[in-house]
Image (tube, rainbow, N blue to C red; front, top):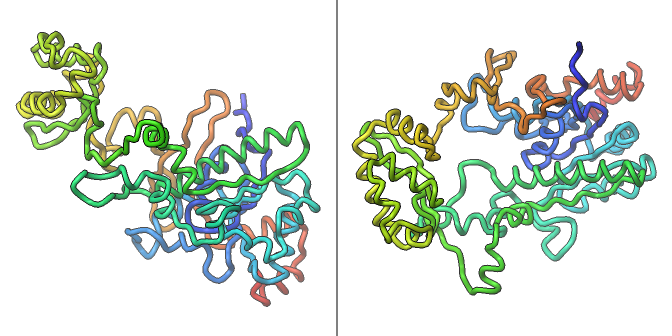
Length: 400
């Protein structure tokens, strides 16, 4: 029995823009089977082809991930002939994803309104720092600025240090994720209306959406969340604790029933009845004292032994993983959270798998990021019907 088609195998996406916010949206759609045609500048391509700290053999390790499951074509969008290619592509597409500054598509004669004249059902997904409207719309907006204005930077890090960043491009990735959600919602809406629409995803708003009750805490209660380092204020125990062999283990036992289990594992069941620790509120008030007590206990036990005791006792706990830990973990392996593909220059290439998992129509990583213009013939001949003379003319003019 053959596998069912991927859930988005009937969706074609034209991805324009570069770096991360727009392309990660395209990656998410491609992971579930969409035909993502990435349009790149014919001279240099997406700068992500060169980005990343480690570049063995001059090859980016980031590009194969964010460009996976995509086809690459080249077109100079500043040339009228390149703009005509986009118009031809969107006539065959369901979605256009772009992350240029507001007004760029309009300047190229590719406004949503003009594209809807070609394809009324086109969903135009636009990812920017500040959105398509408002006084800041025209500003340059990188992910770091969106993280700062959206609130996540202020509450990240230790209280005695300046605001910190997370170790990944969180703002860009959040904006791309919300853009993907919006795209799928717009496609669903199109099934009833027959019409496309604009999905306007702003980085700062995508970060803001993650900020829980921070806004009403200030607006109503006058409470300003601050940086708290490794702990959650008034939520205890929920921290990292040292082990005898020099590792750290995160233990999250702040619920009353779970703390009772932790006390049993520690061999001190009476702690759960002690008025200092018996309730959620009491443990929060005694956080420093309780953390120190737990740390003295964990420091006498090796990490593997500690985790076995905690897991057997029903207490949520785990190591803080690095990449090498993920590659060695049996649970990651059993669920195929990381898959290995072949890279033409680097050989076996480990990459995170598609999330979430679907029981009937799962996504998949079918191939790593393509070479620049690798699919020009595929798309321009096969989809748009160009002949060799047309392709030669466009190549010689530097349009593709």
